[in-house]
Image 1 (tube, rainbow, N blue to C red):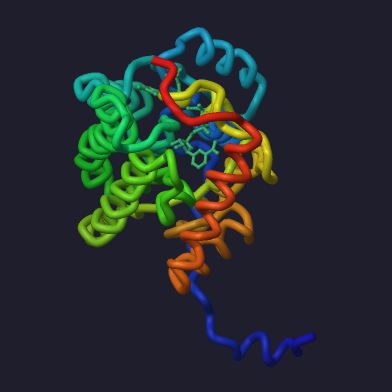
Image 2: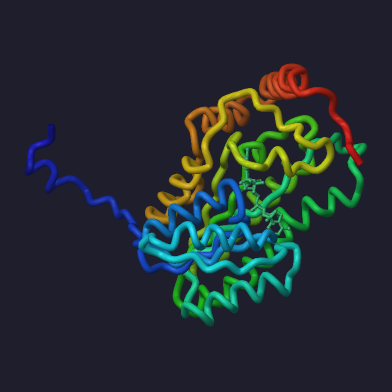
Length: 289
Ligand SMILES: NC(=O)c1ccc[n+]([C@@H]2O[C@H](COP(=O)([O-])OP(=O)(O)OC[C@H]3O[C@@H](n4cnc5c(N)ncnc54)[C@H](OP(=O)(O)O)[C@@H]3O)[C@@H](O)[C@H]2O)c1
C-alpha cells in the first residue's frame, strides 16, 4: 500500500469524467440489440435519450418501459439512410432539449454472402446504412457541437472492421470505413473539443444475425457471445471517461492485436473458424433472394 506522502507526491493524471445525468444523447438503431441496451443504460443514468430506428412501435415501447428511470427517452423514428431525416433528428433534439452532448451512431446491418456474388442493391444498402447514415448524422451534429463548445461522437464499429472474415467482406469494408472516418474526425474536431470514440464489439447476442442480408438466419450461434448489456456498459464508460477506442472483451482486444502482428496466421485461423467450423454448423453460404 502506498503511504499518504507518496500518494500526495505522485503526478496527477487528468481524468475527464463526464456526468451523464442531464446530458442529451442521440442513439441510432435503438429498437434492438446494442442500441436498445445502451439507451436503457443511459436513461437509467439520468440522461435524456433521443432514440431512433425504423420500427416506431419498438421505440414507443422502450420509452414506456423506461418511464420510471432517472432520465427520459424520446422516440424519433426514421430511416438513417435518409439524409433529410438525419438532419431533422438533430434539429428536433436541439429544439426540444437545447443541446446535443453525445451522438451514438449504432444503427448497422450485416450480410452473409461472397463479394463476387453479392447483389449490388445489397452492397448499397450496407454502405447506405453503415457509412452514409453515420456520415449524415455526424454532418448534422457537428455544427451544433461546435456552437455549444464541445461534444462526443461514438461510432459503433466491429472487431471485424479490423480483420475481414469470409462471407462478410462488404460489412467489414463498411466498418473499416467507419474506423478511418472516425480517426480522421478525431483530428479534425479536436480543436472544437469534440471527442470521437470507436467501439469494437465482438459477437454479441442481438438480432443482427436475423437481419443479415443474403442468407437469412445464418449467423451461427456457436462461439461465446457477449450480451448487449455488456456492450452498453462499455459505451457508458466511454462517455464517462472520454475514451478513444474501446474493446468489449479481452479476447476481442487480443484478436485485433494478434491480427496486426501476424496477419497471415490470422488469415488461416479466421478462414478455418468462419468457413469450416462455423459454416459447418450453420449450412451453406449463398443468397436467399
Ligand atoms: N451483434 C454483433 O455481433 C455485432 C458485432 C460487432 C458490431 N456490431 C454492430 O453493432 C451495431 C448494432 O447492431 P446489433 O448487433 O445491436 O444489431 P440489431 O439487433 O440487428 O440492431 C440493429 C439496429 O439498427 C437499426 N437499423 C438498421 N437499419 C436501419 C436503418 N436503415 N435506419 C434506422 N435504423 C436502422 C435497427 O432498427 P430498425 O430495423 O427498427 O430500423 C436496429 O435498431 C451495428 O452497427 C453492428 O454493425 C454488432
